[in-house]
Amino acid sequence: MGALPEVDTMSAAAERMVQPHASFEPVIKVEGVSRWFGNVVAVSEVSFDVRPGITGLLGPNGAGKTTLLRMMTGLAATSTGTVTVFGEPVRDNPPLYRRIGVMSEHETVYGFMNGREFVTMMGRLRGVSDLKNAVDRAIEFVDLADAQHRPMATYSRGMRQRMRLAATLVHDPEILVLDEPLNGADPRQRLHFKHLLETLADQGRTIVLSSHILEEVEELAETVLLIVNGKLAASGGFRAIRAALNQRPYHVRVVSDSPRELAAAVVTLGSVDAVHVDPDGALVVLSRNVLDLQIELPRLAQKHSIRLRKVEPLDDSLESVFGYLVEN
Amino acid sequence: MTRSRACSAISWRISVLSVYHLTLRQLSGRWRVVIMSVLSLMPVIIAMLMLRDNTAPSVQQFETTILSTMLAGSIAPLVVLAIAAAAFGDEVEDRTLANLTLTPIPRWKIALPKLLATISIAVPFIAMSALVTTHVAFLGEWRATIAVTIAAIAAVAMYASMFVWLGLVSGQAVGLGLLYIVLWEGFISGFIPGVRLLSIRHYAIALMNAIDDRRFATTDHLSPAVAVIMATLVIGGFLLLSIRRLRRMDVP
Image (cartoon, rainbow over all chains, first blue to last red; front, top):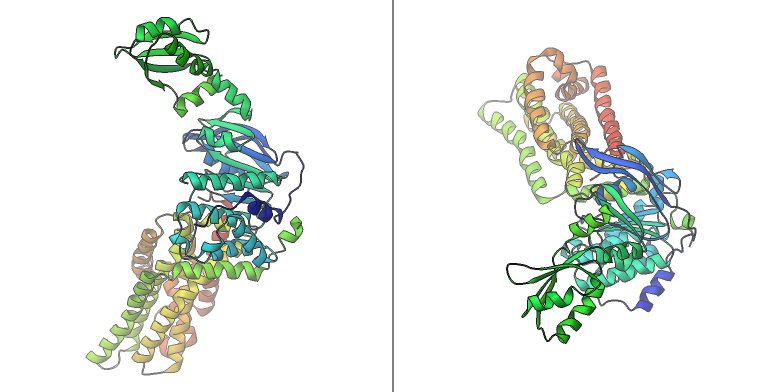
């Protein structure tokens, strides 16, 4: 893989890409959409609008994100409800794909092709004029010019993802739909991919990306659609959702050399709802303001000369986070 | 750059040729070529053995054993099945079909080149097999050779259309195709006269008879007109079913 591009280099490439319209009208409308497979309901009565910018579709594995994205791109039919893109039904409407770029979570590449052949073929199938320059720009944008003539079977997962992004971008789509785009990427590749997506969003494109990782969506998306058990559990700005998360009750386990003395001190904090010492001798604290607890706990320990050995959240799993948001 | 400049009208030739070339590359894997080569050589070897053991085989012997049973009834469909079931089947299995369906080209421009690529790969093997077999058996008689070769090509086109569709609708296309070849074409259509009207093997044999009726005018074959109509219906019908399926299916 080539070196990460400088931001300036990426911007220069990005500038040569299309500047989509700056309208803030809904670009994608999902209205009362459900999908079931036999007796299993994958998506249930979901409605929302998507506008330009980055929208994150967040939810645990198996929540129905991929099914929803597949219906939003016309790959799958809805059981009930409608999906429209630019006011037109997306299903069985091939001309719309001039304006949409889709990257699925699966590594849908042809191993016998090299990267350039793949991007060229996708550009040709989408009717790109000035194909050579469009392919050059797309490959340059994902910083894979050095590897473009190598068979894709020899690429790392991150390189395949980026070459697929180049193929998704080659026709300059106004809408990008990316299913778990950072899945399996190493930290360096994730950083690079995030830079690319931010650059694309800055150009005014509509980007919908799915993820089951809260922090991933937090870093990228301005708007979040939270999907749990096939239902839209929450939607809106990420800050509101993060604020709700910060106010949820946390169980924190604290291992120290004097748990009972620490319990007596901690219970005086306004942010603590309850404390108890578990059979192992560790202190378990229930707090609704975990940020305050994070600040006050070390201070209290220092004040009472108590040594803290371990502080760990007990219910920080995705399921508990999503469960809390659904309840609230 | 504006949207209209970014995407021009897609020439049907460009999109059809792109899918055609892609499919050719997908289907010309080494193991498929080996299977097709071995299968295609079998009628030639058997014809040579027949010549060696006796004198030249009788027309009836040749037609029943080599042309009807082997070439049209098992070798051609098996060779075509090995290729055609993968034309869409492999794309569904490895989820690359979405690369094609998420493009602004009409679905017939995906289904037609897939079928044409399948036929393009299978025809050289089957046509050469038919040509050499007939040439050997009938000591170079050109009219019989042409009749058998054309009938074999028609059989390839019909089987290809059917099995390309089968690969699109079922994950068990090879198994179902084998059942069809053995039970329907190999067994039922050989014993129940009425079923011949619905047998690709018998359409191919009827076409062969039509081209060289002097040598192959035997038994109760279909009329040439019926065979041509049915062959057209099979090729066109399954192609339309493939296009319809592409429009309605959930693409993985």
